[in-house]
Length: 283
Image (cartoon, rainbow, N blue to C red):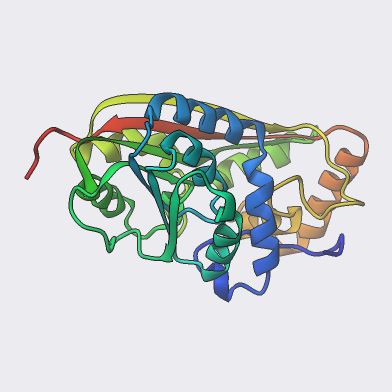
C-alpha cells in the first residue's frame, strides 16, 4: 500500500470494499493492539471455557480470537464462527487447520442467527455491534442461542473517547467534538454494553475497559497509525460534522503529519468488555 493511500476502515460491507485487502490486514493489526490483548486475556479468564463446550463467535472476522480459545475447549469442544464477510471467513478457515477442537466458519447474520435455541455454552462478539443497524437485536439473539446459565462476552469500542494530541488545541477540540456524536451507526456502543446485556435478560455482569494509546507514527512510512484510519479520512469526518471546512483539510493533515515527524503525536481510544450470564430460564 502506498504511503499516500487513505482509507476509512469501514467494516459494514467488507467484501464490497475496494480496500478489502487493507481491511483484512487491519483486522490482524488491531488484534495486536495492547488494549485488544488485554481485553481478550480478561475475556478468557472470565468466560471459564472448559473441555467439550460449544462456543459461538458472532462477527468472528479472520478467526484468530476464537481459535485461541479453542485450546480451552479441547478435542471434544466446538467453535462456530459467523461473519457477513466471505473474505474474512476464507482466512478463518485457513487458520483453523490446526485447531484444538472442531471448527465451523460460515456466513451469517448477527441479527438473525441460523442456530437453534439453547445450542451453545458460551458466545462472544468483538467489535461487531458498532457496525450493526440494531445491536440490541443482536444481543437478544445471543441470549436466545445460549443454554440457560451460558456465558456471553461482548467487546466493543466507544469512539466518543477518541483523542488526538499534536500540540494544537483547535485540532484536539475539533476531533473530540466530531467523534462525540454517532452518525449512521452505533459507534459509541462500547460504553453501553451493560445496558444492552441487561435489556436482553443477561445477569451477573462483570465489566472492564482498556485504552489503546499511540505515541509513535511515521507518516512517511505508513498512511495511518497501526490499525487506524488515515488523517485524510479523519479530516473528512470533521468536514461532515462541521468541525472543519473542506478548504482547511490539507492544512489539518499537514499539521498532524509534521507533529508526528517531530515525535509530538499522541492518540488514544477506549474499548469496553463485558461478561454476563444467561438466566436459568426466560422462556
